[in-house]
Image (cartoon, rainbow, N blue to C red; front, side):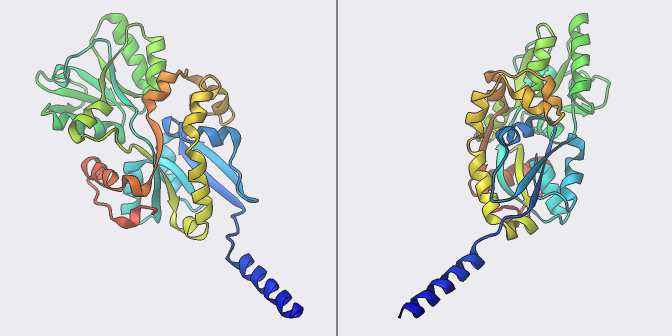
Length: 317
């Protein structure tokens, strides 16, 4: 009987070893240099521990993130939700695991306005992709005509595209010094930085509130955590553990506002040069909601802004 019991114990141990998920050796997580990186601030600072796995974090230029995610070397990434949906529609095997940024865009300007209609006849500097898509969506839903270019038109908002916030802020500062009425779309924490450097700069339009007025939804799924199918299929417990860890990121941000520049200095991120306050973090609208809880809002958002029809395979549930 003792021999039988010992044999059963050995068999159970072998079965347990075979069914237990063995962690990956190395994991590469990419993110654009900007607000989305704040969604991973806690693990960027404190690291992420999972079995014997080494997790490497890569902060890249925002314009590079889609290309990086398309590469085999990328396992997970934080990226704009519309960009993730575009890659999915092109056949890249990835899934949305969570939404982590629910809107950080604001139209700032040298003067206050009462409504979006007050922007008619004015220039609004904006960047590409999600930013201009959101501005156009909000203007359309409020029946405010717009055009793209550099010349103002009397009854239209003129949207002028720039590469990034570093090009928009000097134009706002120049307008402020000359008394000109000009507006630009910035995301936090660039809004805080611009207000620090430009006297009298106003938040003219909160695009999150405008979106909520249209949809009755609190914020919009601006940036998400995606995982490659090849990775999640093999290491589901890694993904589950990472999501659980990132639920604590909000508390981390509250407790480490002043030291955030030092965290990003280690990664040579542009965020190291910005100022952070509790209000800045609040206006970034950072929180984590898993795929199954945001599925419909993501589908609606991507359809409206990116004209992409998603299906269930896009969601890691």
